[in-house]
Length: 428
Image (tube, rainbow, N blue to C red; front, side, top):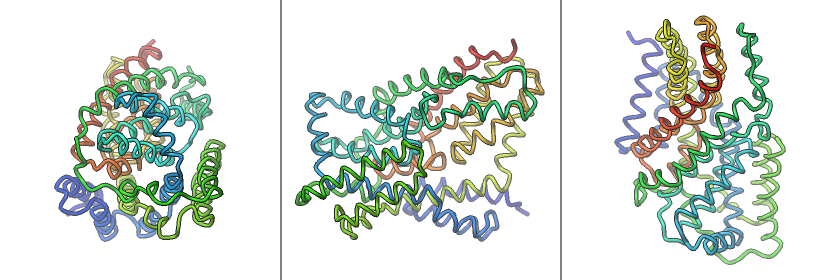
């Protein structure tokens, strides 16, 4: 007799198989998973239904419309022309420029979903201009969004995150040492710089020369080729986009800011109702909803807790700080591939503190590595909504995303562990 944890893991395995064989569109494979999870009792109906209207879904849908509104203006053409001229049409220089821009914006925009939606229309336009397949650029941009955002924490939306981490340390019995405002940045920043270099010079070589699956609706539309907007609507297209960025940077609720922007885009006539609906990109949204529900089921059935218990048992008796640190990174990386990123660090950090406390070692390095791991996994659509968005925009298969993501994950894990466990030795 299967228990719910086993059923949930079997359904997860089914989803992975469906994603790999590609006989059913991934968005509908994810909807099938939702149905199976509800029918088998792995997740409650209200949880599944609530995922259709959660704040991230609203942010995604609204941001697609806001981004489409910007695409309807001439701004993207003008920016692309300027960038093409400055970089002499070099693919590497263009990609590097977009990667750096994404990294800089990522220190201020609190939603990586909104960040990707802001950047990828610019990237798509440049791909069209340079006659380059979007499959060469979209995944590196996704890496920049997920893995290099918030790496300078004192100026980002998680500026006070170290206070929360210190609260965990104290709550779970560790009072011998604390994290400072710069502790995580001293690890995240060098790892982020290396990540950018790998994504610029190595990752494109791992990407397919042409999309492996059909591109998403937004990516396929070229609204800039339509008749130009009136001067007033052109300015409104710019203005709404800029206002949304400012609102996000100011820390306002992302779904409210982006939804308001989407409404103004349509009310002002920058987009017609039909254009707005066409650009909702429902395949990406349905894929996100499906993997969100699966993530909830994995948490509710105890799969995440079981993984944590296994880690604590496996590390008993280990006295090498680097092994301990990398073990927590590896488990965080795997968990992020099954659940969503910030939720993983929230679950794993207390376990790291308890485990390290029991072993008599300083938990600060492992705590930082748990957070780093939650920013490093881009091997499945479950880790963050940016992955299915990039898969849709670049036409990637699950196999390609897994292959490229593993390379980034291993490099970040080794480098992050070396830095964190040297700065904060487990055994002083």
